[in-house]
Length: 472
Ligand code: F6P
Image (cartoon, rainbow, N blue to C red; front, top):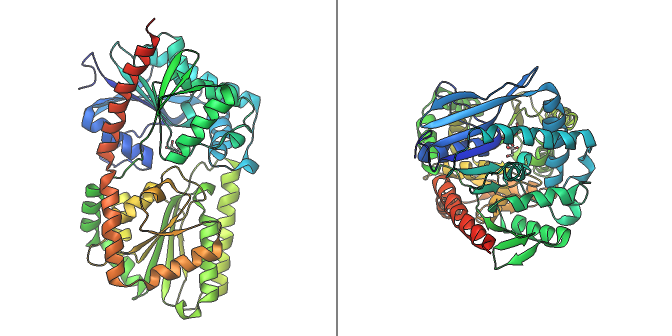
């Protein structure tokens, strides 16, 4: 199906659209996954272009690449501050990550959330044609389905949440939580990363706003039927393995290896976000160094932390804290000929990152809570089969449901994470290979191309079920 062919188009909506820029690959879980799905199937990707403008433009900017039509809009300064920074980043993001102490609620920000979603819906109504399927992504756009229905769109609309979904008692900290929940009944299918999220959602809908369960995988509310499903997002394992192999011979990898002087490499790579547990990870590494002096001079921890949402105060605090803990470890343990920590506060290109993963002995993925965490899957996909590294993974990441052969740790248990790293460093080659083969099979089992196809198939079925329920 190609964009503009009239019928049956896929229209993807997400807050941030990864615009193709001179052959640069997309980065970030949502962006990589959506680009893979759209480039296979064709369609439209609608959303914010990441910029701010003084006033709202009359129509979205249009760009065509690889069979995908990108339609993007800037946000006004006020919408950026109130909807994106205020409501999405300071209210919904900490809420879905169970971080009540970080919530900042303001009514004007909640109004902006609805204002921006209504504005997106207005533009979409000018684009949508009968037969189109709309696929909405993430917490930024929960009300969008209802806004489209209110304007008369009757085609299939699916929603997928990339983040966790919190239990009702946490969700209730959002003052208009009932209104938030009601929005979901506009969708034909609501998809989650894990069973835990799905369970929390069903409970919130039934106990919070009196939705009724219908069959095993459906809910009904005020005459509307919505199906629920679990669709764990995957990584493009083959593509990553290819990039890692090519990158192993690059100058960067040669320079990294030379600089290690035979020391073993522990690596972490995250968006600089408090949900990723980076501070706690540094504390675990500090614990490891303080309890295992025999490792001094033998290991190096490389943390790559791409700056993110840097206008939001909680992220500025995190940045500062990370500088502090990294500095403290260096001050306490470094020797004139050994730096225990290397901290890169910037993004590095994905092919280089995958090549770095492939030469690392240990990968640290220890979020305090995460919808999936694709870095865990990418680390596995990038490993050298003859000498695979070990993944130390948080039990509180969605990926832990599938990657059960990783060294699983509780990120709040700093000593436990430190011991997990020690266990990973001590693992025999035979054990590493055995675990890695099983982990790779799990990563292949949830390949990114299956993910999009599976979700869209389920959405088509859900739309049939919903319309069957509407018949007199
Ligand atoms: O995965 C959650 C998410 O909010 C995505 O929607 C987004 O692309 C990514 O994190 C990065 O966040 P932001 O778009 O706020 O920079």
